Structure formats: C-alpha cells, structure tokens
Image (cartoon, rainbow, N blue to C red; front, side, top):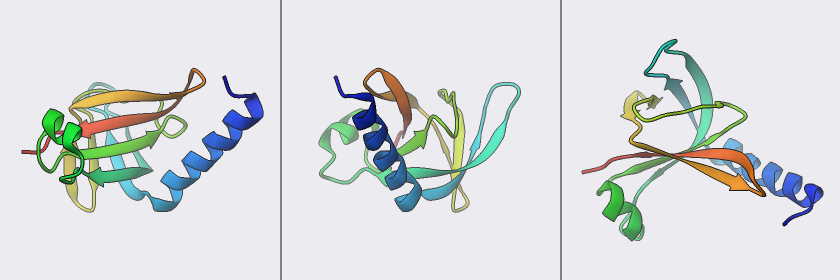
Length: 111
C-alpha cells in the first residue's frame, strides 16, 4: 500500500498527463437528466499492437480516459463528442489507486 503522500503524487502526475496530452470533448449523459459537460479526456485509437483491446472491441476501437474529478459517474451508452465525431460508450471500467477511484476508462467498439 502506498503512503498518502505517494498516492497524491502519483494521482497528480497521472491527472497532469491527461490534462496536458488530452483532447477537448463534450460528454452527454444518455439517461435523465441528460447532462452535458465539456472536459479534457485521454483519447486513444487501438492499433495493431493492442491485441487484447482489438480482440475485445474490434479494429479501430477507442479508449477515453476521464478523471473522476471531472465526471463522477459515466455509464454505457453515454456519448463523447471529439472534433465533431460522436462516440457511444460500450464499456466503462474504473481505475483505482490504493482503493481510490481516480479515472474512468471508457471503451468504444470498433469494427
């Protein structure tokens, strides 16, 4: 188990990476109240090296990494719009560090 200081340092570093290298996106909640929010997210397209990701979600699958501090709850069928293209979330997985939920990993199916 990490110390609180180490956890805080790692959390700040990983959040900084998403903020610095991320892309602007608009999240839209599918269920009521159908909230929308502009956020910066990590955005990745699966490449040929992502064998497990391609096997699970197909060629061209997308992965969004979203800070829990920005959006507390994301679920299947919510949408992200990036650069005019809209992506529907297929699967959401939590990312924890020392039992603290830091990020959502959101997967969009490819072909």
